[in-house]
Amino acid sequence: MLPRLVFVVAGVAAAYWLLGAFAPAGRLRFIGAVGAGLSEGIGGRLLPWLQARRRDASPFVDPPRCADCRWVAPELVVRVSFAEWTADLRLRAPALAGFSTDPPEVCRLVGGLGGADDGPGRG
Image 1: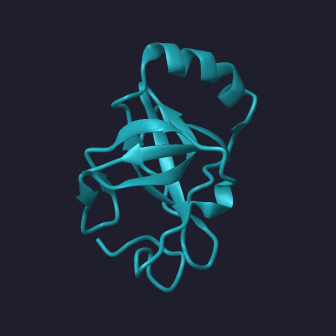
Image 2: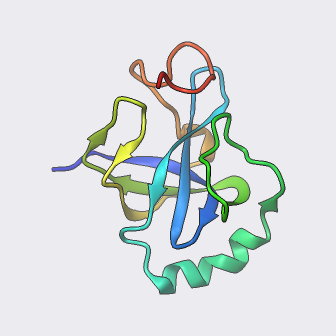
């Protein structure tokens, strides 16, 4: 069975949601983009909700580089299954598994993930 954890949506790019988790000191780290499991129907229904939470600046301490990124307040919590963590703390093969009513604060990097500070992961 694949790991399944909760993450917060903090941006949108093309057909992907940009996911984050809070590092030990509380800053939001980018951990990957999920497109699998995100049907056009789900994305379309949530688009007005996400647009209402749009912001100019990235909420990530280490934002991804993409020309079409649109940032949103990190409020939507989703359950994501994935194959494994990569060496640079990204999700490998993430797929949307559902939504969560958990508050965004529970989306944390634990067990040594994220390091002791909030800076970008080692590259």
